[in-house]
Length: 551
Image 1 (tube, one colour):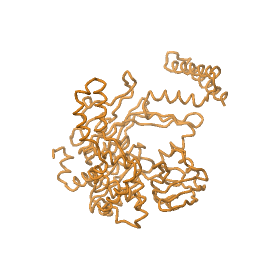
Image 2: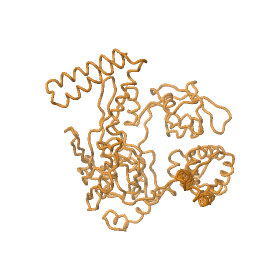
Image 3: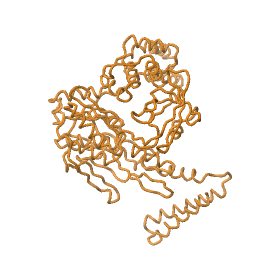
Image 4: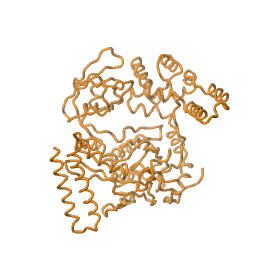
């Protein structure tokens, strides 16, 4: 194996040297020279290093280190990871169709995908997985467990599970099938007139899924639409173009790309007939909405086609292409930047510029350049897409994060499901004060301690005061402050009961209605959705925002 690897490396290097010999001043001469140095260095290390080395591992370290000098999206994909990469781009894989997680050191089903093998076999949220094909999963990580569950469609896999309400375990045999992860995991009516489409990815057929959801919601009476792109990491450029086209006329410019190679200097226009040019539209974005999600939201903003609500998006204005390599490996490489109709590129980081420590920094707001939308509104480049209406950054209290992180909300939802055969519709389901009191009692012997940020700051202040010899001067004040802010779990359970109830309701609803239940239960607590309902229910305010008037 080693000799074969060295032979191939030598042939590649010699070929590049021969290519470069005709034009030694060309940059290819430098490439060939450095590849020659690398090849000879590698052979010497392989021959003389005191211990045996793994050629693949050593070269992979070099490849990953080299690419780390570029941007995070230029990646080497070895042959054994190609299937995982294909899943990311197509949304398809062979398996049982379930999201698996680890809660309280147990491997559990976090969410079965409705209609697929796991769901049809009766696997439910909260089921503990003990063995896969007779192999214990104890101590395994999620990637290893995922590999055991995945496989060629049509093949069988046996899974030993223990349901929360049962004392003994049972083994279920499932037949793997072709799983297609939905780009639109939820669409439905928020109220009698407003429909919502949640778009979580831009893999193949995303635009068809959005189109189908849009038409269905209109048939159900939707007079306006909320397109939820929060947390969407992006994906295929072609799908972003086609989704934008659903709301824009045929022939409208959607996005242009500019790269070093001529073939990537392209202008992409809407090629299809739209679904609806007039229906009022709100697009929800978050700090983790990126790439294709930023194209769709930015295009809607540039054409004044919809109101953006949420937080400033991530700021990824780069385009990647996949190139084949030897031995079935692949290179995903950044080939261009994209520009939306106003002319702006929303890329937030210039990866070609690094500070003395090698780090890259985001473009400061002071250097962002102003552009104009179709109607004359001012928008900016270089830092993501700014929403027209910014919502507050919501963050859970430390106690809520602790209850979620330690799996206690998840566990209690399992117990609730075992004791209640049914609940109302997810939009109507609420945790009563009496039920919340039961939850508090159940927590009495559970470990969910935590440190608040204020407590941490005070600890750091005390430590710094001691190291800088100021402690004795402020000791009494620090002691008084510590007593005042010292958290009390029982007190916090009451103080933050509203948000704890919120996460309980969503988790419990998932036991009965899966992902749809989680979404619909959140409607009355979601600040972005509430803001969208307010805007779409007030046409005057909606029109003023799109015309640039202050409200």
